[in-house]
Image (cartoon, rainbow, N blue to C red; front, side):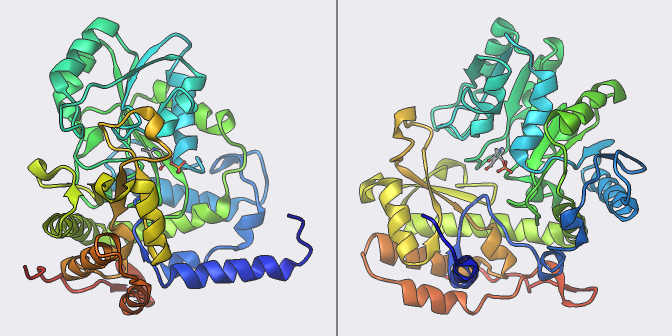
Amino acid sequence: MYEKRISEIEQLIHNQNRWRDKCINLIASENVLSHRARSQAGSDFAHRYAEGHPGERYYRGTAFIDEIESKLTANLKVLFQCTHAEVRSISGTNANEAVFSHFVKPGDVVLVNSTPAGGHISHHREGSIGKFTRNIIDIPVTPDGYHMDVDKTIYLIEKTRPTVIVLGKSLFLFPEPVAEIAAACNTYKVRILYDAAHVLGLIAGKQFQRPLQEGAFLMTASTHKTYFGSQRGIVLSNMEDNDWRKIDRGAFPGSSSNHHLDTLAQMAIATFEMMEFGEQYAEETIKNAQALAAELDRLGFDVQGKDFGYTQTHQVAVNVSAFHGGEKISRLLELNDIILNMNMLPHEPLNHHAHPEGIRIGVQEMTRFGMGEQEMGRIAELIKECVIDRKTVKEEVNRFRSKYRKIKYSYDAVADKPSTPAKSKKTKK
Ligand SMILES: Cc1ncc(COP(=O)(O)O)c(C=O)c1O
């Protein structure tokens, strides 16, 4: 539609700001920037280029971004205890592409998590990795669908001799068995690429597995799901310098030119917040996900992963096929200002992708707004009232959300003084 008035666009931006501020936001791949990080958007860096590395740029005028980028890289190496950090990728997919383009060759066999079992599209035939090889084999999973079948995977490694196994997923409830397959991968020279897009903030907060220390050759990630933002990507590793040069070329010029300096500066701020508040935030996030899962189960939902404690991440997966499936339920919840997404579950065939049985819930954003286990109980009730009792809960959702508007786990409150909520109280059963 042809639109002549700039004010229409400005109005739409305003509408979005107002609307999502009233919603219970439960998309598992999103988060919010602190005000301190957000207020740096639109700095002069938004207009600039800085191809190359700090001190060795192809552009002039980069002295300040050189310092910021160097400090960010140094902090990431400390936070993730690694020797290399690539910060120029502008998204998680872009980071994956930087890696795949140099470590996956035509004809190579690669093992990945299937889409229903949670694998991301960039690991698949139609996505980034599919540009480099077509020999893509799904990692076998245990009958519950949420765990790798380690014995079968090792057998597959021996039989098919992949060059790369991609771990980490989009539907991600439990840690990957990196240490369990590391010896077999060493024997057969298989590189473990761990995609931590969803769990980067939980790893930074030391409440999840440590892939690089457990045997992963490298780790890619988005920086805005459980990590505090901005929207970018990274590659981290302890690999040899020779191999790292390939990642370096993969990032630039391989998969990007300008690396979006304003969001890079915001990411440097968010990384300070993660270093300061990450542990408490990650602990609270996982507790919240477990509390929400248990309460949804008690209220009559088919919560996935029950035999394993539901979840060890920020995510909760629910089979809503008894209530017309994920597509309908996510729309119904959206009408009531509860925002989450539909999701395929591991037992589903690929052709279910537009009408899957599941929904995926992430609690990281609401945790960042200071919600605890008690609030998770209230969210579960609101979801139940909407989905099972078919009540309209929008007004109550807005009223409830209005009490949680300040971003915690940040320096927002006063200058450098931290803003962290008190530890949450247990939900009364
Ligand atoms: C496992 C995984 N890897 C990579 C990505 C891609 O990240 P981005 O959206 O930053 O490109 C996602 C996004 O949801 C993901 O879930």
